[in-house]
View 1: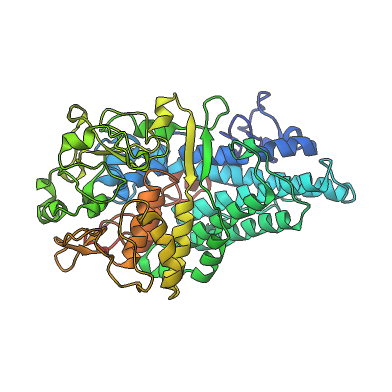
View 2: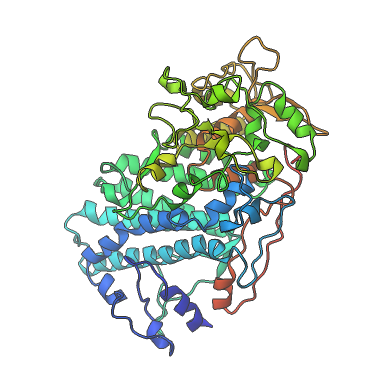
Length: 570
């Protein structure tokens, strides 16, 4: 069984980083492929190790967003971030109501997507540990004299390797119930020369390891001398300073800590003091990946979601909470199979404005920040605008599930498709970071510190500022003199078919949802899971894919963790 596992780890690595791991030749089925570099080649010198390290994050990013059949595409429909009835890439399978468990049997119809993220993150985590271990050995054998020319360059490569390892482990822990914890130490069995294949550990232990890896990257970077991260390592337009790299690392620490919890109880029990400390020292601008077909940073998911309404359209389940005209309440009162699209009228300027569909489809020239992009626009949200959604032309409407059919599309990343797979993609919004801090403040009784962070986005979107003296359970104010002009309007118990002004905590959730809608990675799903907002029966995590289990000589299984009736009664 050990050899079988080694075969899986060796075979199928990516074009740049594919490494025939030590020990593969012990397998009688292994045939030498002269087109792939060996460990001795890739790790034969410090320079080749640095090259391997420089490509790690690109491979991890492409594992998440480089193909449409992946976890991201599934979570979009599971969390009501989008709706599609298509069976492609698990969208209809995961989004159907009632929810079904995640099938982990051999050859299931979402097998490739379930495995992709696990595969990319596990393989590149292994490559990261090998690279860091190799660098450590080069430095040790060189009497601690720099092997890449300067101490700073050595440190940069080691820190980036730990970042990639922490990123891989953290994302595995967010999505899967278990994974293998990998470290740069004790990689090779001295008796056989084979790589040690770590056993599977629960997501909590995997996340602990991820946070330690990110701490290592921070410590190495802070120890100096500071060395910038080359722009192409992170698909940036310019090199990243050591200080900003540390900010990015701390933001990911906050994200991972907050996102681990599978239930509202587990999320509430997270270390919110640590989350707040990291977020308040995190990124200060959006972390944007420059998607490019030439450099190899893929925009497959973004491009696919802009194909047509059948692939992605909005559903009122969550976004309907912006409605202040009573249409959302009426929608909630109907049976699932009887629901129909309605015109959204809201003071929230991230949606198109107008009292008719035609008005919402018309292009408004000024002011730019709140400009309707026009229903025929397929170029994405205009530069300088915050109108994230469009009311599409009626001729582009496509029927789907009654509750998943609406007039609105999220267009934030559509420019990537319009420019042939090239353009900026927000992988980590500064708004997400701000709302991590705000949530931490709210959960630790410091609403006064949270409210300015929430208002930063509310008031920009035309919503009334929350009073500075408000507490977490206070309702948000109306945006005008109208009686129900408050956003969000949240379904109320016991029947959950009427709405009321949301609380300060719900306002934080609303701002995070709107500002991370269709950007980032599985953001709505991870948050909705921890807030207890998922639809009843929604799976809370993925099992270890059967491909990995079979390679380890283990039987496949299906996770039993499913969402109970949530905050909104869905």
